[in-house]
Length: 311
Image (cartoon, rainbow, N blue to C red; front, side):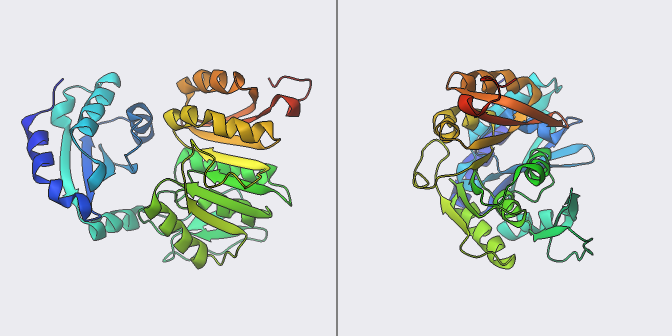
């Protein structure tokens, strides 16, 4: 299916918004799950999605949204069986302050095991042994509400050891790195390609009182720079299928050095492809968790697996 005139006209007239820091909101009238749509869309530029009644709302930075994104969304909807997808989609320009307001009204405190994540305007009484992180919705996604983030925070509560050096690849809001430190890790480095996300994460770190044990910096998952001098014992990668594949060499390099990998951002049907790609580099999945159709995998280098190979 080709793009319609309404999308062509929209992207032609919105080019001036590209440098304003504003957003493009795409509303899809559908019964599909927002997470499933995100997984099939597999667009590295889409910043996030949320579901409200019979609509899924998707967000792109204005400077990284154009006809190619539109075509990819239409293809994803067709693949998922959406009837007449072209007429189910509405595109809107969203000013920065309006984007933040959308998220502010939706985000509620969430408790994941003994980790409580809340916005600053919602006070919650902590039980003994619980820890909290204050995360307000901004231009860095990672408020703890997505299944992939929840899977990793649950897992962290079982695997973090005193003295762990944690590398959080694709850190977003920094929530995973901060949770790891709260749970007893010695130090953490969060890396994200998006400078805006890193700025937001640094603000969250300040709000939550983190010190020099937490470093947040701009970098790419596919490359060791600028974190090639950091020697992690635990690597977190809550990414998407495409980025996990593109980053396999660097992530498996950490596993070869003895680090444990916790990978997420995958749909059920993407597991075999990721396992095969990592196994070809000597890194094997030893445990799997699933929630709402999303997966998290624990993987280690061959020498770290009991009996030689991981099951």
